[in-house]
Amino acid sequence: MGDSIDKRMDVVERLTNLFRFERMVYLGITIISLIMLLASGVSLLIKGEAGSAELSLLFGSSGTITYTAGRLLFMWNEALKRLMPMTEAGSE
Image (cartoon, rainbow, N blue to C red):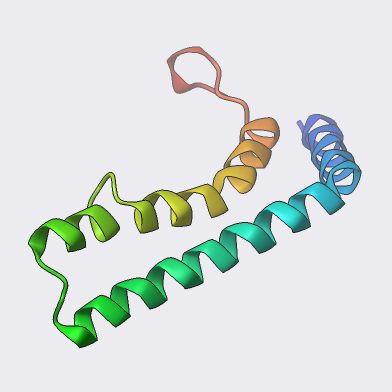
């Protein structure tokens, strides 16, 4: 078991090192987008121009802020999948 987890950790580490530049660019752009979206939402709220339709589009379950924040976690989710692959019936 220990050998297997060490091998998987090595694979995840090599993958993250291999795509470090792309990951940093992706994370940077996504964080900037999230900040701009939040600033737009706050600006709409302060000006009183945000109705329920605009707020649901920004913050709702299919909203752009929700989607952008979710994409920040995508890479870590993929890394965890490589580290702890699911087997049939949830067994180890």
